[in-house]
Figure 1 (cartoon, helix red, strand yellow):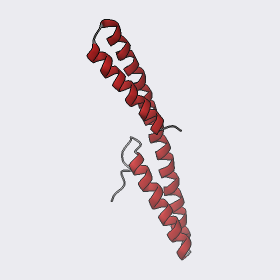
Figure 2 (figure 1 turned 120 degrees about the vertical axis):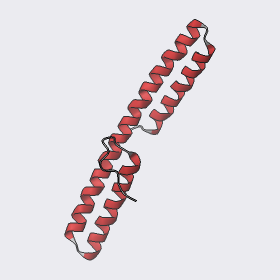
Figure 3 (figure 1 turned 60 degrees about the vertical axis):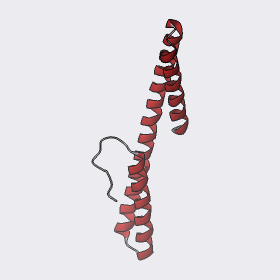
Figure 4 (figure 1 turned 180 degrees about the horizontal axis):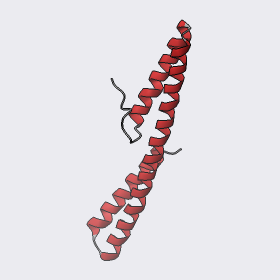
Length: 105
């Protein structure tokens, strides 16, 4: 498995990989007395944790956008009598709400 460190977008999967690999390197370094392994592991773990928080914040923000946009679509659909738009808006709102809930800081 290779990490996706060249991506400019934060990724929870990549972050968890780096966090786990960093911890493994740190444990390995502590076991063999290899300070360079220990330090590299700490740095990779910290990088993974920071990326995870960035991905979480991005997904929370996307949930906020979906929630607000969905509410607007739902209200417009209700006001214009467009049931399809109203239902689609409600679904988008609910999706955004779930996304926010899953990515609470």
